[in-house]
Image (cartoon, rainbow over all chains, first blue to last red; front, side, top):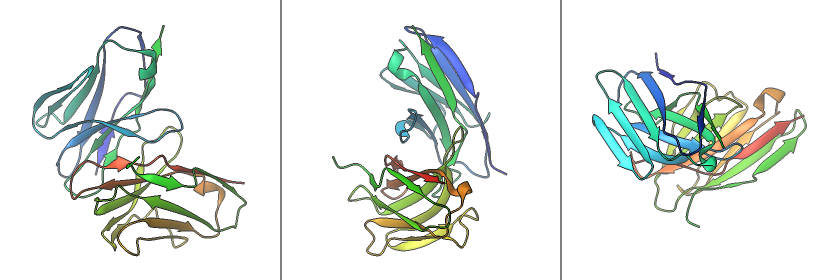
Length: 109
Length: 112
């Protein structure tokens, strides 16, 4: 079967660093994606990993270990506007993504 | 704005009525996807088009659901005889071949 697990909710303080983990078990693997979704809005693309290692993009970084079926999204210098759900999605080698249920991040002042 | 657009953004309907949603993908994207998302869940795949061909429909898509992409550009998703369980956000995404999928703003459907 296809399964993606991520924590349901996390809380962090403005200016801090937070790491959101994602583990996956899929029939194949052709890339892992992180999306940000504010309440009532569509997911917006954050990052893409297909090879092992760290991809850095400004305040956001994403890490992948294919052998462990594991990824994390690292958010630095948290801002209030970072309060949102963060979706981990895997392309198992077909055209459709498999999404996790999302991690709801609350940033406190 | 050259992103994915969807219309309408919100739709309230009574049970048993038919509704149709439209999606306009990013212009050069040949692939178009429909997903459904309910509160607290991630998007669930519904169907996929490559150009005008509908290549897969999820088993989530009952006979009451139909989607078209007649000229390989915009797409429509129709739900016939709506039920309260159809209430959800309907998301459209597009991509160029196997590249990243980009999502539209979604259509929020409420069935009373």
